[in-house]
Length: 355
Image 1 (cartoon, rainbow, N blue to C red):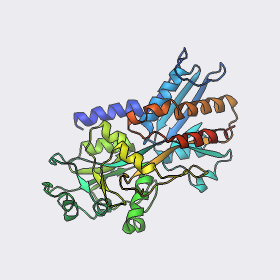
Image 2 (cartoon, helix red, strand yellow):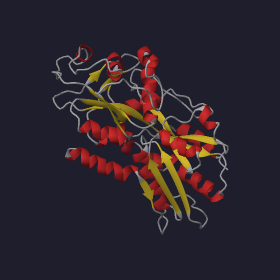
Image 3 (cartoon, helix red, strand yellow):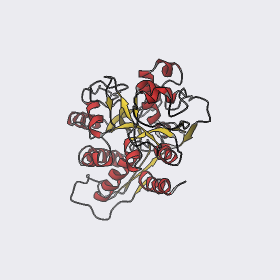
Image 4 (tube, rainbow, N blue to C red):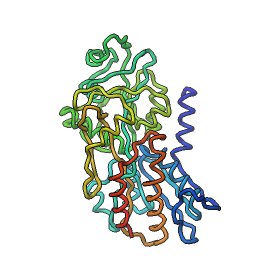
C-alpha cells in the first residue's frame, strides 16, 4: 500500500469507528437535554456512507451533553439492518432504508429518519490523464457489466475527445460487504440499463460479473484505498471519501443527456423536485433536471417505535433533534447535502412517534 493510501486508511479508521466519550461538563452551544442526570449509552451500527459525518455529529453531541455517550460502528448498511433486527443496537443506519419484509421482523416497530444526503461518484486511478474523465451512461454501465476491458475502448473515447487514453486494463473495485451504497448504485444502473437490470440487478449485494478484473473491498474507505493503490482502477464510493482522498471523479451523463460534474451543488439540484412520502422512503434512481448529478441518495437512521428504557428513548430523540438542526451546519463541509428545511420539519414531526 502506498503512503497516501495508508494515511487515508488511518484517517478513515479514526473517523468512521466512533466511540464518543461523554464530557464531564456540558457546553452552552447546542447540546440536548441529556438524560436527567443518568448516564446513557447509545449504541449504533450500519452504513459507512455517512459515517464520517455521523462521527463528527456524535462526538460533538456527546461533548455538549452531559451523561450521554454515543458509539457507532460503520460495518455497512446490511450489517446495521441485521443488528437492528436482532436488537443488538439502539439504532442503526442504512442508505437502503429498510424494505417491508425487514420492517415486519421488528416487533417494536420501525421509524425511518432521513438524516442527510450525498452522491455516489465513480473515482478512478489514471495518473496519465490530464483532463477529468467523462463517461456516458452507455460507457459506465458497460464498465460495471464487465463489457469494457480497456481504458481506450471506443465507448470511453467517444466522450473524451483529444484525451490520450491509456491502453490499460480496467479494474473495477466493488463492495465486498452488504452495502447501502451498492443498493443505491445498482438501483441507478438498473434504471438506466436493461442489461444491468436483467443481470446483476438491484441489491445491497449483487452477483457482479465473474472476472479477475473485479476486486472486492469492504466499506467505502476500503474501496477508496483499493482504488488509490491500483493503477487503472475505477469504483463507486460516497463523494466525501473520494474528496478526502483527493481521488479524481468522473463527470457523468445524466437523464437529460448533460454531462455533470460531481459537486455538492449538482447533487443538491437532484434533490430539488423530490417529495418525501409518508414513510420517508424517497428514492432517486435517475434524477431529472438538466443540472442534476445522476447518482444521489438520502441516508436513514433506523429507530424503534418503542424503547423499554425511557432514558434511552429521550436521549436518542434529543440526539436526532441536534443532528437535524445544529448538525446540518457541518454537512456541506464534510461533503454531504444538508437536508431541505421541509424535510427537517417532516423528520422532526416523525420523531415524536418514538416512545
